[in-house]
Amino acid sequence: MSSTKPAPAPKEAVRASRRERGREHGSVTFDRVSVDDVSRHFGRRRAVSRVTFTVARGQILGLLGPNGAGKSTLLAMLGTLLRPTSGSIRFGALDVTTGSEALRALIGVLGHDLFLYPELTARENLTFFASLYGIADAPGVASGALERAALIDRADDLVSSFSRGMRQRVALERALIHQPRLVLLDEPFTGLDDASTAALVTRLKRLREEGAIVVLATHDLDLAEGLLDEAVFLRDGRMVHSMTRPDALRSTYRSVMTGQP
Amino acid sequence: MIRLAWLILRKDLTVEVRSGEIAYTTLFFAVTCVLVFAFALVREGRPPEDGAAGILWIAIAFAGNLALGRAFERERQAETLRALLLAPTPRPAVYLGKLLGIVVLLAGTEAILVPLIALLFQAQLLAHPFWLSAILAAGTIGFAAVGTLFAAMLVRARSRDVLLPVLLYPITVPVIIAGVRGTAALLQPQFEGDIVRFWFALLIAFDAVFVTLSLWTFESVMTD
Image (cartoon, rainbow over the protein chains, first blue to last red):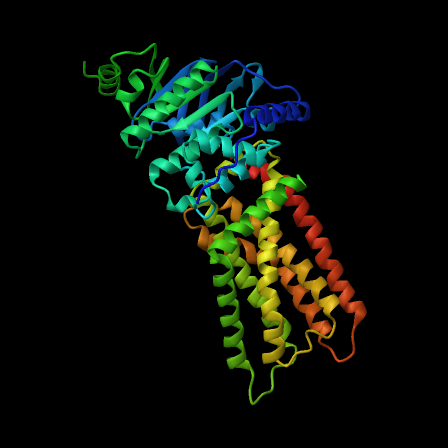
């Protein structure tokens, strides 16, 4: 199935919707995200313990660490899905606990699970989420996103019939459909082939150029190496190291995590 | 909020029309339940007096539990519930959309159950269609209002399939009792309008309390 329907100025539609939402929620904007001494406990288990970092617009920050290090919990708190047990997360001057609805309009999340309905087509999924974000011309914006994902020819196929790479491309467009200011990605390279990985890296670099704040949790140090502006190393929920303009990530990671040089 | 609830309802119904998963399993379970009761209780063509009302509501309660569990399991599998909660929408709109979806699905099941029970139990269920619809609608909304909140709360619990009925049935006992008594009053040879109105009013009061409480608590329940 294919569609030749052109995408009518999707960026303008998103901007108009954002202006509208800005009026609804009060004007919310931020150019940096500050995580200050944040902890999160689940019962007696400390998933995240006293983590502090700041990331500004036009930067990609990597959360690096083994499984169970607290990366996903930290992303959930940045995405307003979880409240910190202690400490604060500030988006510019705004605290995460206030104005959550307005903040969520500026946050895009790509999780390890793709947040797509397999029983809906790619177009239906994107149109649904565009409508949920209050975008005025949701079908037009969805078409534009499908063109960017090079999936316009498969737009009316069910997502359940897509390969992992194709689903990931749709999921990335879903996460970015409202042009978020903060983009959170949890293990986005998992299960992708080389071409899809390269396309995702290119997209992330473009987001940085456009002034977005990108926070990326990943195991893939080789990919992270040339991509990150900041790196935060986590182990057992604690921040054990951080680097600006990181290079030699693999050796740093090994020495930080194992104590071996 | 209504627009967003409608969006979520429309999405849920589209998914259900494509998969048929909840509608078929719920309907199959409810019809089997009614047939078992019919074989057990109807002797020589004579059904037990007032049995139809109880069996109707037992089938609705069992089928409702099944539908609630599956509706949220579907959102959990692809983590789409997280995507709904991440959207800049008032979270009560998510609750309202899911609640309406469950109510529509249960209404479809009830549309099959009512004539089936009327036939098997020789009950005059369709003698007062307005009042029957009103009691079924109010009872279904009350049951689904509590169930939707609990199902959403338990979506990440490992033993959610066991916990949902354990939590749901005790809380919804007043709805089931009011539903059974109101429906039984409709089956009397002489229409007992005052009794029907009393049970209907009780159901409406229950709906108002639980829908309001659920809308109020959904945000905090889903954030942590």
